[in-house]
Image (cartoon, rainbow, N blue to C red; front, side, top):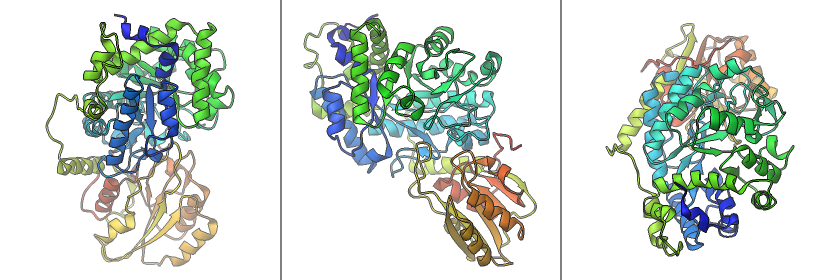
Length: 556
């Protein structure tokens, strides 16, 4: 049934509802006030720049909803990229550091994925967040993929599909919109679409067997939203345009053929794959023409304003049909009405003449939005959550091979080389309070020395480490790769040490590091360096537990 509330909205309000925008403050700053009050944006996305603490973020969510209510706007959809593992925008006490996808894939147990999504979904809802831009259901079958990697559950499409469906069920049981991404698939790429355009050239049979399978399963699981990829698929779209801007992909394939009737959201249009060849305003118009319901512009106020104004003008001039905007808005409002409780009465009311009068009072806004919809209301205590994380870590850490170097000999000194991750990128979110392996081991072994390096060490630094190592040391080299290749300095370090010593190498993120170093005496994959993983790794190395993880990707 068509909602009459749509007819009460101006064109500018309807178009604004189709935009999700970020801002730079930890409080409701001038940028987000302007976007909500003057441009009627219907969605907000949080980044780490917005987070000081969980309490502060909860207040911010309530303040933003109050601004929308005072301005006579529809309630906001507030989102975040909280994928788990190494991609998490909220890394403060009060939000569980759940494992990332590849760690969960390594356990082979989708029930763990379901439970992590339930735990995280409940916490996000309590902060006032409505949508998680997760799970990633890309199948990572390209060893040089710089943007997906451990964000994927692995290289097996069936496994990715099962874990993805479990995550969707977990998030949505808590009233959080899950977002399967990046459609039709970003796993077999060697270029980061944040930086440039990329093509997936496979034929339709191959796409059906691998890339599309997890999305079909996500749709069957009732996923609320699907995010597009800025990737060219020539088999589906013969014109050299990315999926985000392709009507054949978004409407022909996703809507009509695959039967998805939820919200289609674009990846951020400020990414270079969009902004450089098209410009953000033109990309926004083309995305709406293609069939996108929600347009993501994450950072720059001028780009955000220009994009909204461009879509309004495109409707006014007839380039975009008004019916296209209305169909998108119906999907957005239907979702908001379904999860907004008291607000839903306003959204679907057929009688209210004064829409603003029907809005709740400012003081009620927070309570209305921060209510779990989970049918399972059993408590998840801190002890339960910690136990669950430790159990998952012990089932995910993978000993790829061991030439008798484990467990560590308690009679020998241990020398740990630990890469400190300090640079954040769009897909690299190091936790701000992770202890190093040296610290964790020193609590179990008294004779531990540690040398901390950057992820891009110089050759001179490698030479200094060689001089510092003693003949009797048990040497553990931890590697860290957030892009396609292990940095040259880390490669050099492992190569030089391997010439003299038998090494234990621990890949703290990318399991493919093994392909770029001499085969060490022992190789262990952790898929992330979150606190639970580092603690569990120390237990594994000292023989206090056995890991049961299996590689979810091939090292060949």
